[in-house]
Every structure is written in structure tokens, then in C-alpha cells.
Image 1 (cartoon, one colour):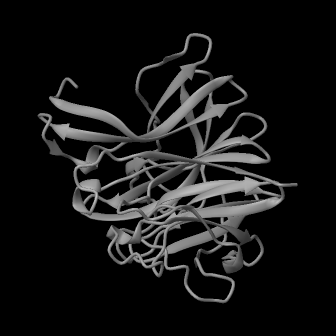
Image 2 (cartoon, helix red, strand yellow):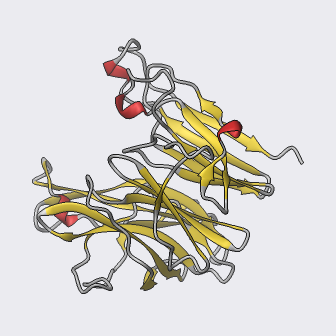
Length: 294
């Protein structure tokens, strides 16, 4: 950049945008003064568009957000990194975004932004309810999906994880902590969770404590999938299955590619190989294909 900063897009989530016939990837920016010192206060929502006709990506661009939120506080460091969006039938995009209100406190607020893509430019139109907690870094890395007539929103926190739902995808009910259907905590914390809809079911992808995984940083392996009760907003414990087993690597940062209403692919790159028993090995990129048997 002209001011000496090096800026890189990161934590990107690419997905097909049917209305424009383009692939839209959304994420965040990493910003380094003189290429060395990171400045978190310069973060923005980054995006780029790929045209399948040319198989080329356009330039890195930034989503222009309003200066203030619904409470009158400033919207600082907006970021859509690792966030799972949902596209409406008319082409409108519901993009989860997190931001902070105080430049001196990295306590994040999460919301859903309704925006439009004209094939090249992503434009903000409105955003919905704003959610945060005082613990840790607030609520961040939110992910969104629609199942039936409701929208479901999962949110990361340093100490636990939260969930809520909505009728319109913008205005959500008060958040609640993720639990199993027996009422016990899901024990997922400081790691993102994502959604999958397969057939008639709603599923959550997550990591958690209590899986003989105390040796893994933030218990980020194994990577699990389980069905969600969409009314009680609880994970049905009896349905839990291992997507990727623990193998001395972290698996917390996953992605979902929806192939059809009956199939999704989950991808995940192994991390922190150099810190464990596999030191010296290359990390692997893993893929699981999940299909309905109906």
C-alpha cells in the first residue's frame, strides 16, 4: 500500500453465487506495517470474485461498512474471516461479520450483514441484531445457515460456544450456550464451528474437550459432526461421529462446500505438526464427503 503497509487477504471462504454465476470468496485482511508488525485495527472485510468463464480471480476488494452500529458505537476492524455465509434465492447475501466497538478492547460483536453482489462489487445494505459477551474476546467467527423456515447462527467464544436462531436471518433470538441434548455443555471453545444440512437434517461440525485430547492445543482434534435439534438448539449426543480422528495435529479450522441438498464436503488442514510426535512431517489437507442415505 502507499503508506508502507503490506496487506494480505486471509481466512477466505469461497462459495458459488448462483445469481451472478460467479464464485465469491470473503474473509479478512492481515495488515503489516513495513511488512513486519501486524496492526489489528486496520482489519477489513476482504473479498474477491472469480469468473468461471475466464477462470481468473479479480482484485482484492473491501466491503464498505457503516461507521456506527445500532447502539451508536463505532464499527471497528470488521472481519468475515472463516465465516460461513448464506445466499438468498434473490441473490442477496447474508454475510456474518464480527467487529469491535473500542479500539483498546478486542471484545468482538457479531452480526449478519445483508449485501448484494453485482458480479464484481459487494455492497452493504443493512445489518441485523448485534451479539456479544464480556468474556474473553466476545463473540466472533460466526457462521450462518438456513434449515426449514429458520436461520441458525453459531458463534465462537474463548471459553465456550453459543448458538441462536432467527426467522429472517438478520434479527436473532438471545444467544444460548451450546449443549448436548442431555443438558451438559458441548465443551467446544475458542474454535470455530460450522453447519451442514444433509437431506432433512441439520448438523454441526465442531471440536470439544473430553475426547482423550488434552494433549492437543485447545482440544482442536478430533473434528466431530453431529445432528442438531433445531427446536431446542442442542447437539444430539447419540448422533456424534468423528469426521477426522486425532493424529497429533490440530483440526479446528475447517470448511464446508455444499455440493447438493444431499451432499457436502468438509475440508480441513492439519496444524501445529512441528509441536508434536509428528515433528518433521508435512501437514495434510483432509476431505470428508458426507452424503444422505435417503
